[in-house]
Image (cartoon, rainbow, N blue to C red; front, side, top):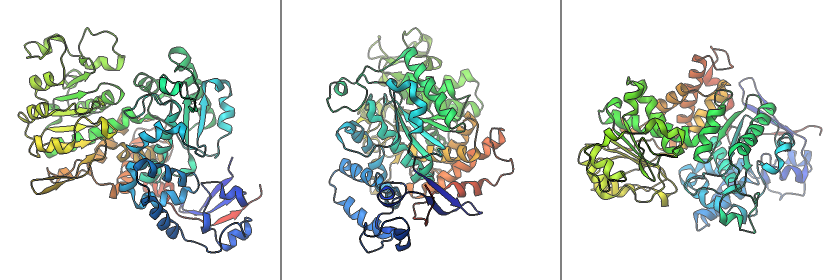
Length: 572
């Protein structure tokens, strides 16, 4: 393990860093490397004299040169690989540059470009990061965890690579998603990158292209399922909890059945969270809360159509359902606000083979009696919109162009300010282009997209498009539960997080404004969310800090900033 200890002052700020690494070992440790910014005294103390050029640089000088190199890259994938190569060499410099150019670079290191990087994972020569746990090594998980680079870990992001973004089963390539998520935790909330770990559960893949690719780096085996899979996940969780009893475990991009199963299996036992289900749902709910309030509506009167009823779609429905319940409706009445459409059409009673998490949203035959249908054997999106007149339309289908002009105009004919959220990503899988939604509704629609889109010029106005990006919520939510040392994540903490994010919505002051704020204020937003969540954990008796703890001070102390700290040498 890398020997690194942060020494802090009475206020909790980092004073200096102690390490036993010297010479090339120090230069090859990305969390410690400063490159040409090592001071003369540090070069003398750590055996770096003659190893580096004479000039001692500042972090700002390095960042300026790095940004110039970044601008020379011609494609987003090239930029992604370049930034990741810097991350592999000097993390402080990486975070300094990306934080200074966050709006420009976040879509490059995260969605949508990370999807391209995932697909090319086995073709790129990269410095190994994180921990890979293959089913073949299932009896050595303790040993694998002991081989990690850094000892003290607060947060793990783990994937099995089955449900990556909108591109499906990517096997071992899912590791890039775990790494990218941790980057966002640091960039958007200041989570300390020295105390996090990316992990990949290698349970095989059903992607024939990968299985037949001689360059594929993962376990060449059909993806595990059933009891074998569940037992392996159980071994993993047990080993993690034994090593880090208070760990925050973030599940990422699991397949739709396993995502919910894993979360429900462990959420009452430990501090854990699934971003595809809960994070996506929180951001969508924040958008809905802001839009409904701005349009003068009532949450209990909404008619919600979801196109796509997988992990993300039902996760969003669950979060909005909880909010409607909090607004006063009974469970039965709240469920009747939803109409969920999967690949085979509207979810209906009597359909076979449906996963358990879809069951609460099934509609009866009586609900559709008398409907005008294009095909009496299958009720699709156009049928639901035509007959039910939704106020909210959300897409998690990954079907490009599914929100057609006729469907959107039909919806807008019955709702003054339709709330439309094509959330599938990457961009090539988005249900509609926001510029079309604006044109088809005469700019009356309230829109949030899952991928970044440029501003739209319409009738002399420039309209910024909100990206329903989970980066608005999971970093602050995670920081809050970690600061509070919460024993578990509750639905009430999630609702508080959604309401706090919603309070930042510009549309509350201007119906033509975006549903979500700009990323310029993301640290403030994340820290406000973190405080609200930590205080909710205290209120519920689930925090392991004093009830009168100064939460603001704890958040400040936990916040890491990309700057070079003085180093002191300690014995190996």
